[in-house]
Image: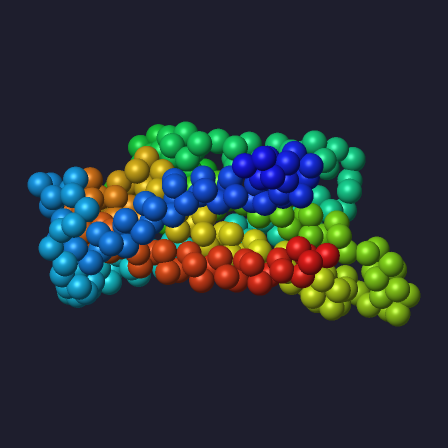
Length: 300
C-alpha cells in the first residue's frame, strides 16, 4: 500500500488514476444500466418482475414481436426522416453561417455569440417557444406565411398529421444549427490562409477555392459534425414531449419517444428496452465514424 501511495504522489501512477476514476464513473452510471437494458430486451418483463434481475428468458421474441407490430415501420420511417432532415438542415445552415462569419466583418464575433442562445437553452424551453411559434390560431409562423401570401389559411402544425413531424424538425434544426456553426467555424479557422492566396494567384474563383480547398481541408470536421449530429438527434426527446407528444396517430412519433412511451406509459418495459437497443446500434456506428474522423487530430 505504501508503494501504491508513493506511485500516485510522485506522479508515476497519477495518470492511471486520472483515467481510472472517469472510467469507473462511466461504468457505474452508464455501462451497467446499458448492460441491464440489453438484458431486459431478451427477457419477459412486467410490472411485477421489474425489480428482479433474473426473469424468464425469451431470446429474440421481443425483437420479433416488435417488428411484427403495425406501427413499427412507420415510426422507424419517421425516425429516419427526422434524423436525415434535421442533420441536413443543421449542417447546411450551420455551414452557411460559419462561412458568413468567417469573412470577419465588424461585430461578427458578437453576432456569432448570439446564435449560441439556442444551444444553451433546455429542450423543453425550446419546445415551449416553438409551441407558440407553430400555434395554428395565433402562431408567428402562420402569420408570416399568410402575410407573405405563401398560404391562404392557417396551418395546424402540431395537430395535422402531414405537418406534425416537420414541426419538430423545424424546432430541432433551430436548436442544433448553432452547434454545427461553432464546430465548423473552428474547422475553417484551422485552414492556412496561404492556400487561398496561392489559389487566387492561380486564378481560382470563389467556388473553385471552396471545392478544392475548403471542403477537403474540412473533411475531418465535417465527419465529426455529422456523426455528433446523428448521436444528438437520436437522443432528442424533449421537443417531441413538448410539441406533439408523438401524435396525432403516431404521425410524429420516433423511436426515442416511442421507447419512453412503451416503457412508462404502456408499461411494456421489454419492448421499450428492445427499441433502445436498436437505437444503440446506430449510435455506436455514429461513434465509430466520429472517432475515425478525429483520430488524426488526436495523434497530432
